Amino acid sequence: MDKLVIRGGQKLKGEVTISGSKNSVLPILAATLLTDEKCVIRDVPALRDTNTMFRILRSLGKTVELEKGVVTVSGSKECGWVADYKLVSTMRASFCVLGPLLGKLKKAQVSLPGGCVIGVRPVDLHIKGVKALGAHIDVEGGYVIAHAKRLKGAHIYLGGEYGSSVLATGNVMMAAVCAEGKTILESAACEPEVADLGDFLIKMGARIKGHGTPIIEIEGVKKLHGVAHTIIPDRIEAGTFMVASLITDGDITIKNVNPRHLGALLDKLKEAGAVISESAMSMRVVRKKQLRPVNITTLPYPGFPTDMQAQIMALMTVTPGISVITEKIYPDRFMHVAELNRMGAHIQREGPHAIVEGVRYLSGAPVMASDLRASACLVLAGLVAKGTTTISRIYHLERGYENIDTKLQSLGAKIWREKE
Ligand code: EPZ
Image (tube, rainbow, N blue to C red; front, side, top):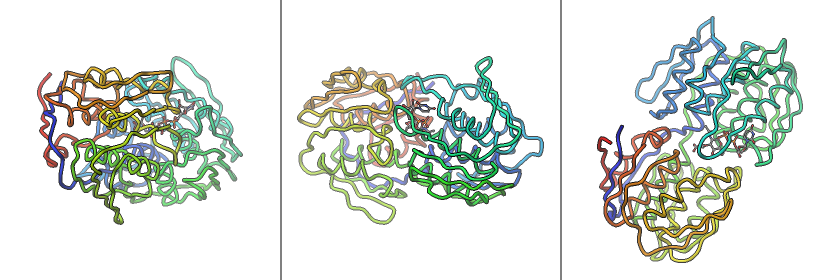
């Protein structure tokens, strides 16, 4: 297993091109199960998670070819319907094959995803949605077993105690596009990745209105066909590089980014002292002399994204003053706090709040990655820390960031891989 070694202190300068969005491509790959025809998907990032989804599609009988970021998924008449435990347990997003399998085959057997370090990760909203469409659900041996004589459109409220659910919205959309009649999803997730999935389904012949807003209307159709589609840029990778520029007092131009997907983050980074010049699909990020502390509360889109909480916490550890970070989506998403404190940060956890008191500098140390965004946070901390930081278990990082070490090296970072 590899570890990442970072010698801090370099001001990162130059240009970086953002990859396609992990959280958009995963449900879109699952949506290819809705047709036997060929689907061509461009700007697919090379990640552990996309490889896992390729394996799941192949296990269900699909042919999946990958050529320089372009994935071709071709059908198979005898498509399987069982997504097994060993694949689903490695990646929770695999659960979003439930909807398309039900939509296409009227049956599915999908392993319940385990929890993970950021929380219990329930699927009750997914189940509520497909049941409302007429699916019969059993839970046996750790599997959700679903089947339906027919799927019928329904009016479904999909809000949960933590607000809307991104993948539940995607799963239910993919089951509803072939249901008979009209479906209305209320309190649907509004993330750009949900909108991108909706665009993909419409290209396949689905009839959808309101995707990307809290109310989605779907008119069921009989059949969906193959498509070609380009994945939207990864707004969380873009946000991570914006913080990399600020935390190292650098000057990074980020290409292939849609500023409209980053409203809440841009607002907070400007409040902290970022100077951002935007053009159609790129942003140049530098900082004013002194950064200022900001208070953050994570919320469903268009609120501040929970997937950027750890990264902005890294920035606040070296920003003079006190900032309070409140995690409302995954109240336990603070595995990075202990590791940052080992690097000299002053962070106090109070339930869903982390109180960060900025310090003059962090010190490099051996640290351990625990989940995808916590790993990114530790990379950012290592870039600014005095001395050398080694990050172990970087397979977490490789789940969601394509070539992050080479991208950072091209910006002047002293970062390299070593065998554990
Ligand atoms: C998606 O996960 C993302 N993953 C996550 O990104 C992201 O953090 C999350 O949305 C929130 O934005 C992908 O898109 C592959 P949710 P998802 O259902 O859909 C609760 C990353 O770092 N909930 O929107 O699984 C849940 O516990 C990953 O890239 C229920 O209560 O998240 C959470 O508190 C991490 N019941 C809240 O809703 C359900 O049935 C939001 O979760 C489903 C979710």
